[in-house]
Length: 142
Image (cartoon, rainbow, N blue to C red; front, side, top):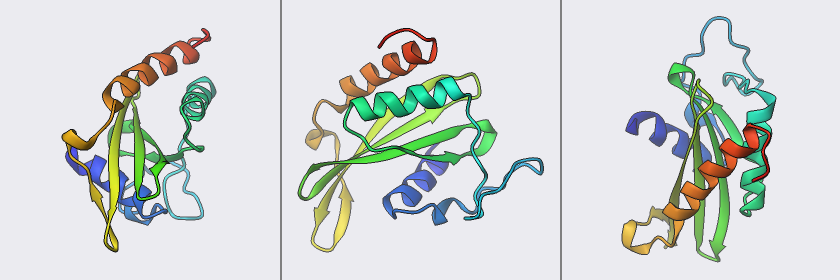
């Protein structure tokens, strides 16, 4: 799991998806102009992910195709002037969403990943977002 996640993070933090171009799409997959596999999610699931992220202060996510039919939705939100939280949503083929946060802080001229001691309540917010995505995807109110 660390391989695909780090690949997704590299593409998202770099404000582009060039780091994900090495993913090999299946022969039948459509390819976008950027050379990345086009992501096709069930409309209800994509809407659920977008609306829950927006409700938590995240801009529209970038959707990235991963190996094994996994789709990643990645969206950053500023936490302060020199800090940002990256929401990484793993969407499985079965329609399950797993939400994780990766916190970054500006250190000099670069970004550093913050350890567990410096994170806020991201684990509880991630669990809440997973429940909200599931409910919204089922057509229930979050």
